[in-house]
Image (cartoon, rainbow, N blue to C red; front, top):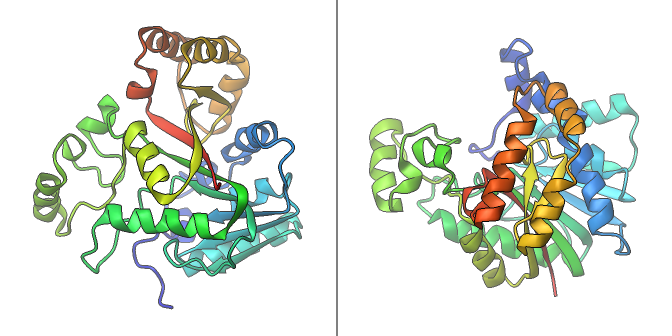
Length: 300
């Protein structure tokens, strides 16, 4: 297979940024909260094999080794596979391996995984130069995830919310203005004019995302708001029912979140962010206005 030219090389990013992205690419804060949440959410379920699709530099894959006996990281960029292997060797972690592969054509056996992770990857898998509809390609990726999962296995998917105000004003992936508030056909016109290619980095609101998961065959879909965000999650807030949402918000350890943000090089006012989130939850619009989502779904 040829290298997927739509994927990103974290090695080149690290080499060209002068240390700007070191924390983002390499920080353990990228996965520590996620793995802690998985240990609680997946308690009692088998934890033999996990698959990290779009593993990049392998930081999440390495984190998953704390819970799973064997972890496989898959990436469509050979630079990333090489970088992940070298970093893992330096950490002396022996229960993770990395392979080249595309999310729509996983080099993984049927019903072999207890967990599949798509963290900040689902929006990118629609990019292609074959003229294929991005949503159709994304559905194929979900079908592939379902194929490799064991019955009762879980999918973890994290992605930005299409309807968040900042995302409506400026797409976080193409940096184009307004494309997420427009019909896809009009977004294509803008992208073709500005970038010379169609708009393919599709993201969704949680209702549409849940429908896509159901269409692919997943059940028991549960949506959370990762806080302070899916890239550095410390706490996971269920978007319903409201009483459970408010209880989870009240249980947030603000000092812990502040430490995570500082470790990730992010400057936010945690107290204001929590207050804003609680207000939205009381008004019943947290799911609509969340910046991003983390979704768990099961293979029946």
